[in-house]
Amino acid sequence: MAPRANPQVSSRKSPKQARSEDLVSAVLTAAVQVLRDEGAARFTTARVAERAGVSVGSLYQYFPNKAAILFRLQSDEWQQTSAMLRTILEDRTQTPAVRLRTLVHAFLRSECDEAEVRRALADAAPLYRDAPEAAQARASGARLFENFMAEALDSADDATRGLAADLVRTTLSQVCGSFSETPRSDDQITAYADALADMLCAYLDDIERKGRNA
Image (cartoon, rainbow, N blue to C red; front, side):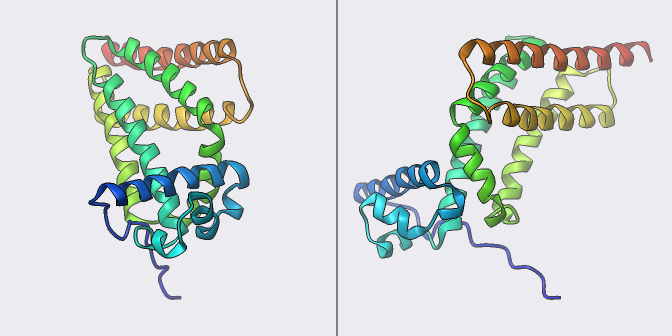
């Protein structure tokens, strides 16, 4: 069987003039609107171009296919999330426990605020999840958690830290994603974030206690 080709998800070129930047911005804004209104299954370049008020040919100057548009949206979301993670997890003026609790609250609220688009992007993930760019983005996020665990769990061995990093990262992604599938009030989000933070902080505390007593 022939190997599956990686999808082309990189933009054809980067906008260099204000007019080009405006066109790309209009396409991305329209893409979000199409995703929210029609979902990933009905997402097409033609619908995006029509909503953006540009020709399909103009769109193709920057995005070779719908996978490239969707990946750009996903990439922008990953970059925003990575920036949030880095700002919180690398803030050494706060204890690791405070940082983790702050992160849980920020991450859960972000998931709830952008739930519709995130769900649509998750549905579209098969179009770009095998692309090298996607793997690089996932690896970057994983490193942030690994670096945090190296500081937070200084009594643990490398294998335990790696397990903790993967477990906390996966729990945040899966649990917060599931919670955000239903509209929530501010009080519900705060209460859920407090409970989730309590659980994760207790988990790290238990690892540290066992490491000190080993």
